[in-house]
Every structure is written in structure tokens, then in C-alpha cells.
Amino acid sequence: MPVTIEKIRCIQTAPAGIRLVIVKVETSEPGLYGLGCATFTQRPLAVVEAVTQYLDPFLHGRDIHQVTDIYQAANMSSYWRNGPVLNNALSGVDMALWDLKGKQANMPVHDLLGGKCRMAAPVYVHASGNTIEETCDHAGELWQQGFRHVRLQVAVDGQATYGTKSDLQVAAEIDSPTNPHNLFEPADYVRLAPQLFEQARTQLGDEIELLHDVHERLPGPLTLQLAKDLEPYRLFFLEDSLPPEEIDHFRLLRQHTHIPIAMGELFNNPNEFVPLVKERLLDFIRIHLSQVGGLTPAWRIANLCEFFGVRTAWHGPGDTSPVGHMANLALDLACPNFGIQELMFMDENTQAVFPGCPEIRDGQMWPNDQPGLGIDIDEEAAARFPYPDHPYQGAWPAIRRRDGGIVKP
Ligand SMILES: [Mg+2]
Image 1 (cartoon, rainbow, N blue to C red):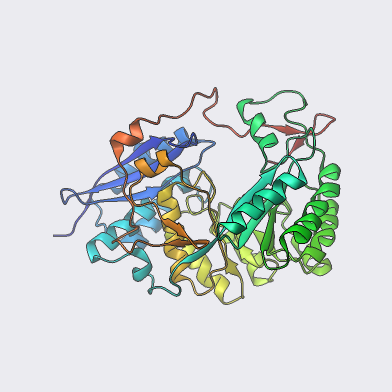
Image 2 (image 1 turned 120 degrees about the horizontal axis):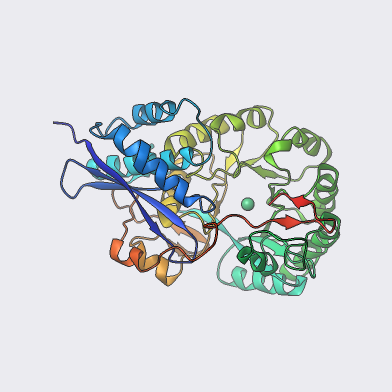
């Protein structure tokens, strides 16, 4: 008798104040379940509806072993596909099925994918500050703690700058006319960022690997300017230097600079990667595993990239749950073309909700080698951290130019 899907449900929790959606696939075998990350923190309630109203009834009674067929069938069942919300829902189910397969085989997921290519995954962490000095000091502390890869972000004085405290202040607002909390002027930022990296190399030396995230906030010509101005500081990569709507500009960037390029956390459709990869217009893919449809499509994309010399850098911010981080880690260990893993520190509350959070040591993320994804959820603990109050349940706040125009996130 095959083990079948009995019930698919969502657990909503926010132990670090970020709205997470965890999918739990319960089976016909008592006590056997799988966990997946379906987090889309700007639209969590829509994802929960997609799971409970559509995927749960559609997949009831299916053999849990048929991971690929379930992915294909569920993806086609909406006719229109490859968009956010439905992909998040599908990602949660897909990861949970891999978790189940590992538990049944008594193997960690990385073993199901061919086994470890490395013992642990080197990570990069975030340093930020309101001033260049603050950011460099923060990066220096992280280096002292053993992290060899650090992303640097600095605030433009009086502006909402991505990756800094000044950007977080705007999060409480939904939208308003331009004010000191939501203002962003691209040219001011492009003048400041190279000064940050100049100081970082002076203060921190040549050995540390430095990264930077533009977060798609610049128009094409300013991106090109920034990339060229950053070249002397030998970045590990420059991330999301252009928005997904302007991917043709990556060709221009490639022709004019040798800065390593990372892109992809905003892509939903697994096919969006293909032109960039086959033209070798990027060096690292930045996939959000709970946005692209789960482990199944991510593994295929990673394999495609391997043939073109493109390395992985799976998205790993605070809105990736620890379940999602463990799925990232399974791929990090199994992919020959692994590049780097983004890490957000998991606080005490998060570790209480998710027993089995990965161990961080020597600047690397280490597996626990437990069957499946190697992580669990304590539902009683999860219930102690409901979503924080927010009028629109977590929508991304609007960032505006001085003239009032909207800036991409
Ligand atoms: Mg990013």
C-alpha cells in the first residue's frame, strides 16, 4: 500500500516579526509528515488560500513518492502558472514531499540528490550602518567572528536606503507622499556606495570577500556607472543591479564591466533564467526557493547552470523560513556548482519554533544529517508568535523619488 497525502495545511507564524508560511503535508501513515516553506511575506494570506482551497483537495490521496509528477500536475492544474502566490504554495508542497521522501528513505535530502560535494556551505552575512564607518566596523566584527564573505550596505543621509535601518523605518507605513522616511534618490546613492568600498578595503584588507545589493533601485546608466566605479574593490558579486523588467541591460553590463553579477531572487518562472544563463550574462543565480516552485525546479535550474559555469547563491534572507534555509542547504551540499549561501541569523524565538535550525560555525552552515530536511516545527511555540498587526498584512512599502515617483523596491 503506498503512503498517500491525507491533509495539506499551513502554519502561520512570525517568531522574528516576519510573516512565515510553513506547509505541512500529513500522510496516511500516522505521525509521518513533511514540511516545506511557502513564505511570501508580502502576500501570506493569499498563499494560505492557494494551499488550503486548491492544493489540499487536488492532491488528497496522491502517492507521496511521485514528487515530480505531483509538481507537474499541480503546476498545470491552474492553467495559468509560474506566477507568485501559486508558485509559493507549490514550493511548500514540493519541499514537504522531498522532506517526506528523505524521512522514508532514512536519508537527508542532500543524499537523495547524489550526496555531499562539500561538508558545509560557506555563507555571506550582512553588515550595514547609517555611516560608512558604522558599516565597516560592523563588517570587521563579522570578520572577527569567522565570516569570510560580508555584504556591505550604507544609508544615504536622510534617505530610505535598502539594507539599512533607514529603510526599515519606512516599513511601518503603507504609502504616503515623499517624506524623509521613504525618499530615495539614485544619483546620491551611486556617489556614496564606492566610498564605502574604498574605506572597507583600506580598513579590512584584501582577504575579506565583499558583496553589495543594489536591490534594483537604479536606472540602467547609473547601474553601469556604479558597476564601473566598484571594479577596483574586487567584489565577490553585485546583486540585483537591474530589475527583472530590464534583463536585456545585463548584456550591456557584461560588455562594459568585469564585475561578477548575481541575479534572480525576483524571478518567479523557472524559464526566466534560461536566456541569462545560456548567454553567460550572470555569474550567480539568486533563486528564492519558495518562489520558484520548490526544490524540484531549483535543482533543475542549478543543473542547467552547471553546464554554463554559473554558480548558485540561493536567496536566504529573513523571509526564508528555517525550513527554506534547510532546503537551500541541501542544494548547497549537493550542487557541484555551489557559489555561496546568504545567511540571516536565526534568533532565539525562531530556534524555539523550529527545532533543528542549522548550526553556523567558521563562517559556514553545517547540516545535521537527519533524515529529510532535518528540521521540525513546534506548533505550540509557533502559535505564540502570530503575525504582527499591519493594515495590509505585510505589503512592501512604497519608496519615492523627490518628485514623488515610485522607485522599484
Ligand atoms: Mg537581494
